[in-house]
Image (cartoon, rainbow, N blue to C red; front, side, top):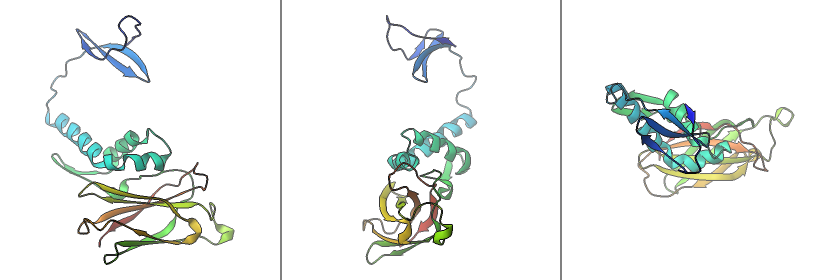
Length: 209
C-alpha cells in the first residue's frame, strides 16, 4: 500500500482506475483494487447483514456507551465485541443476547447483588444493591450509580446518570408510561464522584411490568 498525500488533488476517496483511495489512522493511502471473487456468497451476505443488524440494534445506546466507557470511540468497539460474542441465530434471523452487552466498562469495583422490582401502577423501578462492610469496601461510598434501561422492541433507551450513591443501596426511578407491554433490559454501573473512572456494567435482567 502506497502512502497518498497530495496538495494538488486534495482529499481523495473511492476507486480510480486500478487503485482505490482509502483513509487509515487519519492519513490517505492508495492501494491496488482487487475484484472480489464472489461478493454475493451466502456467507458474505450473512456477515454484512449481521453487521448492519448489530449496528442498527445498538445505535440507540451510542451516547450511553460513550459515557459508560469514557471514550468517544467506544461504540464501534462494543459493536465488534457483540458481533463476536452476543449474536444468536442464523441468517437472516439474528438476535442479540443483551446479557452479554456491556454499556459501561472500567476498573472501579462494580455494584454487588443488584436487583430490580417494577411497579406498573406508578411506572417506577426500584433498584437495590449491597455493599461490603466498610473495612472491606472497595471503591468509595460516594461513588455514583447510573442505570440504563433499554426497550429492545422499540429501540427506546432511558438513561439515569448519577442518580444515587454506592452507600444508598437503593434508588427509585420513574420511567415513561408508554410501551409497558414491552420488557426492559436493565444495567447498572458506578462512577467516581469526579467522573473520571467507571465500573463495568452489571446486567440486572429483563424487567417486566
